[in-house]
Image (cartoon, rainbow, N blue to C red; front, top):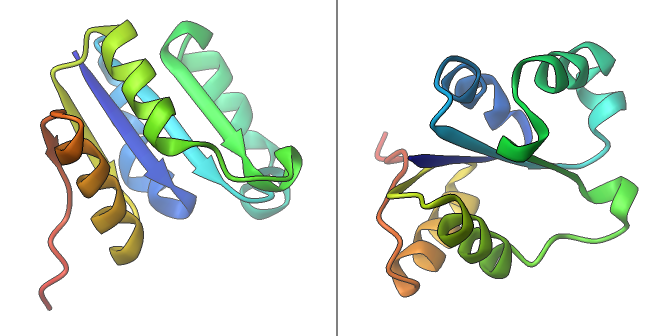
Length: 114
């Protein structure tokens, strides 16, 4: 079992994984999702990934950012995940990888070396 966590437009690279694999939990964090990405994407996520395997967090709608440390820890343990796949911008990736490592959650993310 795995978690695919992505921020913003990282959903484009991540979405097919939990859509095709019932052992992958999706966490997507972005701002103003409907205006930025349109309603079709949200509908696709709702139709293809059961609610028990996804958390979609709109920071504009919620008026805040989620507590990512607690969110990842809770999902990792409750879902029985073995690894976290990270898709974010360089700063977000570094932060998410740090969170995972500090909490003994194996993780993989992109390397921004070019």
